[in-house]
Image (tube, rainbow, N blue to C red; front, top):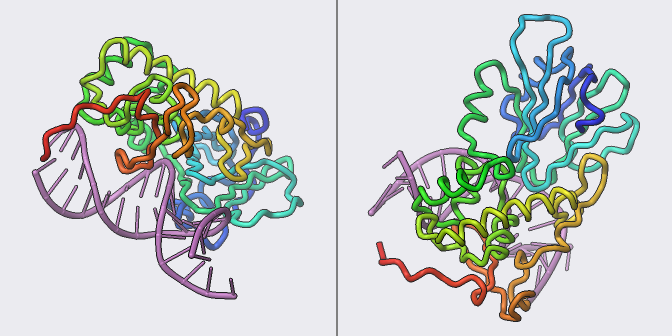
Amino acid sequence: MRLVLPGRSIVEVRLSAKTDFIDDPASLERELPGTRVKSVERYGKFLVLDLERVAGSDGGKIALLIHLGMTGQIVVGSAQAPIPAHTHAFLTLDDGRELRYTDIRRFGRIRILLDGERETVLGPLGADPLEVCEEKFREIITSRGARIKALLMDQRVFRGIGNIYTDESLFRARIHPKRLGTKLSEAEVRRLFRAVQGVLNEAIRLKGSSVSDYVDAEGQRGEFQIKHRVYQREGKKCFRCGGVIRRAIVAGRSSFFCPKCQAAPRARRKS
DNA sequence: CTTACGGCCTGGGTGC
DNA sequence: TGCACCCAGGCCGTAA
């Protein structure tokens, strides 16, 4: 995306009939034509396309915000290419090609960000786990009473960590998902810091975890799923200790962990 | 304020 | 052929 989109203008916008995942479909059709892509950035789990208005210039900033959810895919290609099922947005570019958004489950999200909205939407997001230093990471983790699993997945605490990478990071750091952030030792926080960055960097390098048939913008499958140590390995042997991987619901999400490597916290008093 | 939890959205995969 | 069930991220309502 970063290689093909900057400099391209959006000529036309077409949407499918199922636009319930788009915040304001009419605003896309109204605002996008006649804009040029300035930059493409990742912000947590969001993709932010910074746009400049080519013709009508009121100086106001505008951006296109895209969240792929679980099954969202964006591809830039020939407008004549066959249209995959569940393709819901078509942005015709000035070179004749098309940016298409395809999303089987429609758990993704698309919206326009006008001047002030950028801060409203992106402002509440927490630190980027790949940019934060260890001291800051420690400060964030140890100042919250929530379970570490909930903390890592909360986009207001850190932006961009989801369920798979939370479980893989906690396994690598040998920390049980139900542990409290405030109760982690100095050594545990350090292990977790390194685990999170290691897992994310490796996942990015391997283009993510293709659980079914996900492909990235270049049509490539991710390969990180090969590296999964606990995710969706319930009942299988732990690669580290040979114990049995278990699954439990923590923070409302399916959580996989090795009960031997990741010791459970002391039972908390009932509420 | 923070945290926890249940439920809803969607549809492919799975198991009966 | 059918059908109940599971699950994912975000979000909302509710409760403590």
